Amino acid sequence: MTQLTESVLKDFDLVWKNFFVPTSKYLPIISNKMNYPVDIYSTNVGIQFEIAAVGLEKSDIEILTEGETLRVIYDKEEKETKAYIHKGIAKRAFDFAWKISPDLNISKATANMESGLLCISIPYAKERTPKRLMIN
Image (cartoon, rainbow, N blue to C red; front, side, top):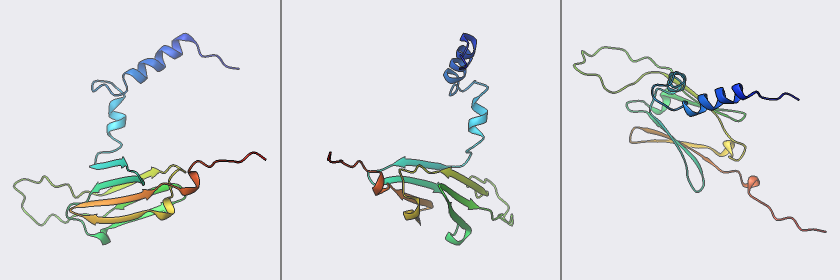
């Protein structure tokens, strides 16, 4: 059996404490992973993803479910035909993937676009709800 030395535990504590500090050397690793406006939150019936899709068409976005993974892809390049004075709306390519918990039923996921947001809903799995067992 391996024992953790005190110095290893202190290093782990240091990493964990500094994990979300803006001046930490660990923060750039996290912030580079998701540099696109995405909201993920839970509801009474499941989990909701909201991805900014301003100016994108439904046909431009591909949503895949591969096992327990949800993948959302937009890989169309915008042709720069306009002479922008200011360009604040990002229409850049993205390729997101999230591992979905077995507590959610990814096979019953639904998606719609409204008001420039791609909304993906994944309901909780019914078989994951607690069951009462009778003792025989």
